[in-house]
Length: 426
Image (cartoon, rainbow, N blue to C red; front, side, top):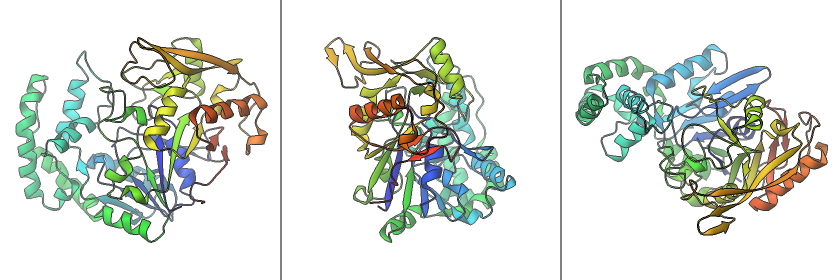
């Protein structure tokens, strides 16, 4: 196996940071293919917690090359701040291991301004206010500015002015004051010397790595149910969060992908607005949030928590072509006498085992309960170490999702992992 995609199978926050970090032990290159600083990956190495938002988790591995591909929306200021933070902590010693696509689109101050102003409205979507959505709007409207424009700031200023002609009326209507093109480019002039040396035609480099048989890990952001095409629209992100985004976001053809890993928590969480049928607004949900430390790594907002949704997981397996599941945060369920599982939905059209993605506001989950466990599972390193009830829960998920678990996380640390299969191993 050469090219492996890691994708979230729920509403994001499934624990991609830890799993990608584990897989990169065997990877020559890690490629982030979508999203922007609205994503956050939390890594726990030893007793140290490290949060990355733009830079792939593979940056922790000295011999792994990391790529920010053209499908991303990148805030130049955030990139420099994050990179400097990793350098100061001694995590990154050689910035030459990081490559940034010159075709990735730049998140600029007016994107962040618009995002924040929109979130003050009653119909706010609950974004992270990082400017990602407005940046992708500019990209789709063909007025976006790529990072390659930092090589010619005179041309960049003309492009910024053209974009601001569109945004000024919107910003004014929202009650804000737009920046000038000169101010925007002035900030870019300070950042360009740091970013331009990192720029490259990453599509060519990634394709060459795959062609040469290098082990390439494609790292997704957010999750399937937030995908712009396949998620719970309009409460979705602005990019392609499914496995297909690995191709469109990097320039690597679909025939090159060998294996897709889908990440799913042993329960469900969601941040921001939008339907969440299995949400628990009670003491059980509060307990899951506390034990699972369910707070956004980017925003700090408390995540909504709920039982595992098997129809939604089957849906994610289908639209991503998931070959193996990475089941995370299984330890958070420890101590529950019973665990609820959504197995179907009642809809106006009848009961269905499919995920009624366009009827979630009127659909009612059908639950079954399975026995819980009280034993501490943090020390388990193989499936046979787990209590019988825990193993049965995993088997139930595998059966109903029609997909085997290849990795099971039983704690936040890197070593608290049961590795069933290496996705790079045929």
